[in-house]
Length: 142
Image 1 (cartoon, rainbow, N blue to C red):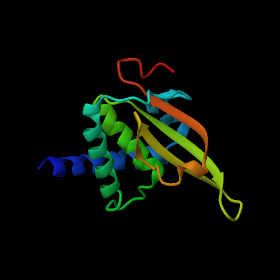
Image 2 (image 1 turned 30 degrees about the horizontal axis):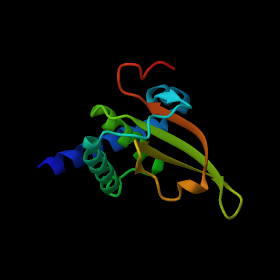
Image 3 (image 1 turned 120 degrees about the vertical axis):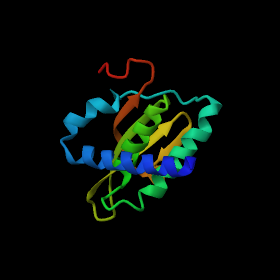
Image 4 (image 1 turned 90 degrees about the vertical axis):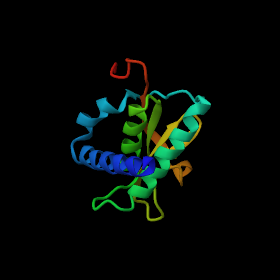
């Protein structure tokens, strides 16, 4: 039952992430946290299981949405789910050139030392933006 609820929650947050992707980024950015800051690389060991569960739920449900749920949508959804659980995270935005020279973008989410979403291929991208979602009542100071 717990897994089903987590999957349903991830479906909801993937929908929210897709909606947020559809509106101008300048309106969404303040809700993502502190611009060009990062959260700590250490985490409480108790969070490891929760972070892994959120990551798994997002990656599973993203395959079953009837809307596009790629890297940015997954990163936003996972960030919101971790925020709900009082777990800090950092969302990274990166750009690179593909084989044909076209500009491509990627987003990924890290919480402590763990990559929650988008870790595959992230090393090919240059970080052009990052947002730290800090917990403790000061996350909206930008």
